[in-house]
Image 1 (cartoon, rainbow, N blue to C red):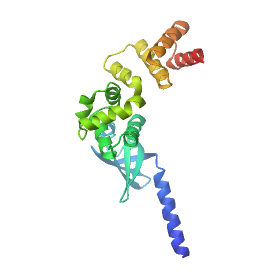
Image 2: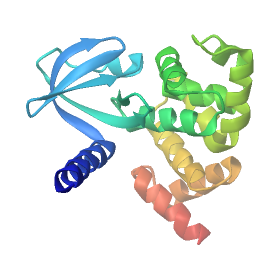
Image 3: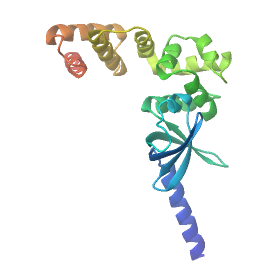
Image 4: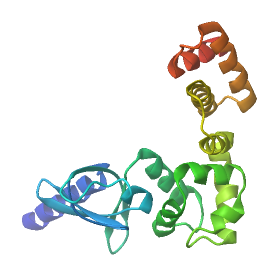
Length: 220
């Protein structure tokens, strides 16, 4: 009985440790467009990735850090990896908020459209663009828009629009400050007005952080 309890305790501890993996930092052993093997202190981890992360990988043998999400199924524990926090956040948003979308479809979405374009498509209700992604039909695209539009908000449309144009450094600074304020709950028009007022007060040399702080202070 003691041996059984010890075995169960060890197994449970190992499961809990695995469940708490949030990133892997090690050597890239092997890479394919949809998965990689990472050597972390002599232990090889197989990780499924989207194409957006594959494009950012080093050559095999190089140092790599992947943010991860563990998905536990009855028959397997599967690690999904992402080169950026934005990719992982979108993956989580999709599988946690859109009915009918599992990890495989979420990876397809990240592989078929970059994060900025995806947020813009959702914010603008662009069902046509979303439905062109492999594994995403019209009905699924409509569900994505309905269930994520409020979460992504107008900031997604503004971000996507700005990415299509080459902005000057001053315009980019303004855009970044506006996006930051919108993420904090400002309406788009109010964010623009606040940033413009802060720029007039602080001058062209003001950083994005200084602009946002000034707007928040004014709105307090």
